[in-house]
Length: 441
Image (cartoon, rainbow, N blue to C red; front, top):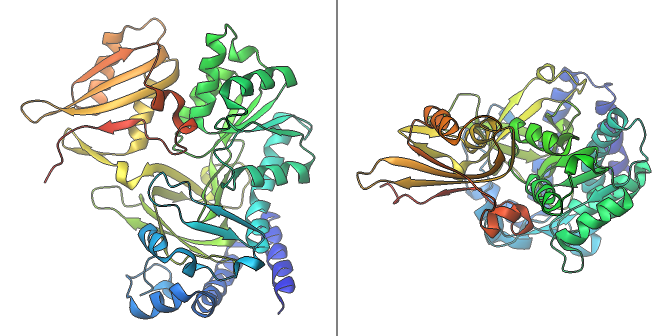
């Protein structure tokens, strides 16, 4: 089969799944075949995997085909560089890199088959949500991404063109645009939809308020968020602040593409045809929550085998959402490295955000600092820009102490420090939680 025939066959396969023409059992059988094919493909095409698969032994898997196959870690990718790739760079369609916020940037070239098999999921999700929110594709959209070497802008720009959605690229990091000019253009142009990180949505709202403009009075009706942890409480919080429908755009990475896409009910759905997804157990956490591990099935420029994403996740059946998607729901709870012990109990990053956001009517930003007393006990200092309604700071503080099981000092403030204030404007995956305790041996 030629590369062009393979490309066409894959697009037909993905489209058939999205249209409900492939039943779960047939998908499972096809996935087993795809997994065998991708293992042969990387062993032949990637010098890294040729060595990696032969010389290292991995753990058992729920998927028989992956039993004994070694994991691929981010450290592996940093060390291997371009040797992971399966396609020469003069045969790719585009080149990206990771942002480097969690380590040295790694190359992320993409072939045409990567772009289209990943983008078709995003395009279907966008089309469904625009139809639900606007009843049309004619809604001017601001694409607000992190950098030129990131796939974000190209992915959404191409999808907007395909669907006939008018758009403007408003890069908040660009010295020629910035947040001030972006806000002015949103108002002047009558932008109806934003695609950005949660932190940018909050930063924009704060900027409007500082200018005497209520975000709820702007033209924005739909917000897609991506790029960092976003709990259901954060989706609701942003919706309240803007009086706009807020949902996930996609969950993915430079290395692994669009792993899951959002729906109008606020859930994420796995791109089932493109991945074998494993949930690796983490001691101390619920049995169904663990590290998301992916085997990429599309034979493109850089498919990864048993790639440990570093993210905590849970998979649930499609019925858990009810939006009509045929794909399982993917719940993401934050980075594994951000899980901490607090008051003697493990706590997920998502639990911290959920607790903070449930404490107020609207939260425009927050920062959590975990400290250690002279006696070695845990305590928390929480600063938030928020509207707390008729409740007092003392009442909210007490509620938080009951949830976290440690003393809490709560401050309702007008500003946070610059990194937290701008969030992803400075770092696309900026953490709002800081642990300043002495390292525990």
